[in-house]
Length: 284
Image (cartoon, rainbow, N blue to C red):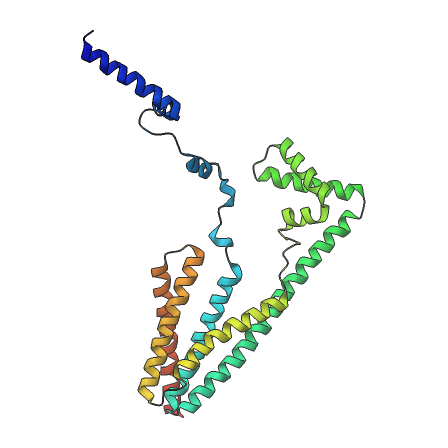
């Protein structure tokens, strides 16, 4: 071995000893043990891979109250603006137009609240009746309890569980809370999440009022007839587009198509309201 070669070898060995003391040699070993064609995941990547997929949020179950509020505001905007457009087709007086809009807001909000209260109350009455029927059936004795347990087992088997596992799951749930487990699995009722009729009514009235106020305020301070109608139409267009985009985002759908659909529907409603009232006024 020549002298230059020996010096290079000595330098290489001392560098390797230095890397080993600094903790770099294990890193080199890890690099050598990486599979061909790829690299080992980092600690952060491993943590992300270990996260359970069951935490993913489903679009159809996300922000139900918010989506309902957006739809209520959309209804309030279109119906109130349509009334104002119809009245403006028969009279250019801005005061009459604003009064008609306020009347539409009050009657529409109360109508939405009353309808939602009646609808949700009827639904809740039916759910509570089913829950009570389940409790009464269980109180009839061991035979009734065995029948409910058997129905739970059959339900889980229909969902694809093996018979033995379906039996274990059914027995475990039924042992914890017989009525609640039977209501949730067999009837589809979550006893911890029953809808409040009053909350539904108030939410519907408020969301409708927000949409109606957008239409009223857009034309409340404009005296010129043509300008007032143009501003009302432009405001409704922008608000409807925003409602369409928000609804699409909440549902995970393409927002462009949803916004265009909502805007075109609103334009059609305003146009028909104006034309119908215009010809009605002319005929009378």
